[in-house]
Image (tube, rainbow, N blue to C red; front, side, top):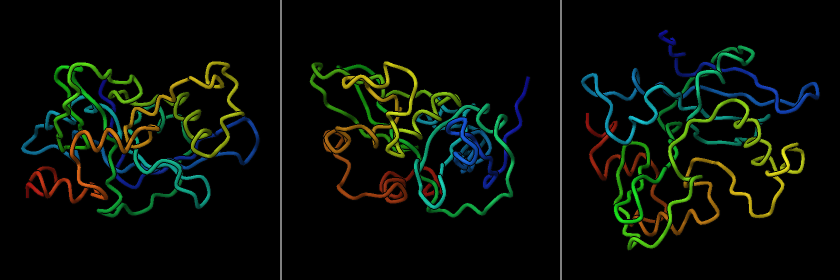
Amino acid sequence: MTVSNPLPGTRVRIPLTDRPGDDAVVRVIAAPRRDMARAGRLSEPLRPFADALLVDVRAGERLLLPGAWVQHEVLQRGEPLAPTPVAAADLRPPAVLTGTPERAALHWGETVWPLDLGGAVAIPDAARADPHPLSRLRRLLLVAAGRRAEIALTMWQAPDFEIPWQDVRLLPRAASWFELAQVPTSMRYADAERAQGVGRARG
């Protein structure tokens, strides 16, 4: 069954807990097959997200997640809200790690940055490509809001639990991964596209 892709700017409200008014707003930034394909094809870094949606998420005025890949159920199960415009600067895709310790790369949106891990550094599962279902997204939003203690699942409370952000940017060692990939410090995603001539820089 084909799932229709909501337009950029489409918004829904999702509950964070069962308390009335405790919610967040998910806004669609892009649907890869429609909005990020070139000549009908997705670039290799985007293929794991072909059937996902790129969104950002706010709670009130606070931006909790500047960019996240989510499953369609997040939009399907949310309460529809009036759409809002999406600007070019809103395209802030997550960064993920691919490959093996012997042959790895950091994929940030459509940009590709080789990683020399020397075959010795393990790639954390929380850095792999894996679009969020609604249940995981709600827990991540509680963590991002500083409310991790409210998550009922015991394993999420363990000090050594690796938060499944599926986004290198949000990992505790984020700066180290970007440094290993030789991504220039303070580079924005739009700058990365231009540097590699991909995405919107391809014309």
